[in-house]
Figure 1 (cartoon, rainbow, N blue to C red):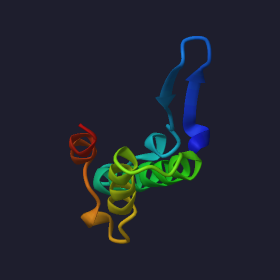
Figure 2 (figure 1 turned 120 degrees about the vertical axis):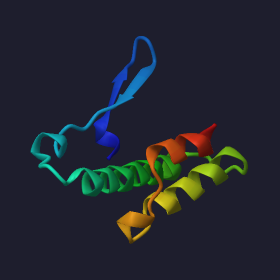
Figure 3 (figure 1 turned 180 degrees about the horizontal axis):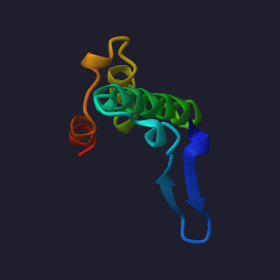
Length: 88
């Protein structure tokens, strides 16, 4: 999932980008797609944690987010608003 990061090396800015599933969304599928996007975010966090130095503090929160996002039951995954609150 890290391949979905668009990076501007001159400015140092990064943007997450993945429009593959959004183009196929049918009415009534928005909850399923949201749960899938949250899982994908959890996988991205997991990949980033593999590259990070093993430190306490900020990484502890990211590990918690990863666990929440990868919950096997989509209905139990957090919303992106809940993830943002955890990061604040």
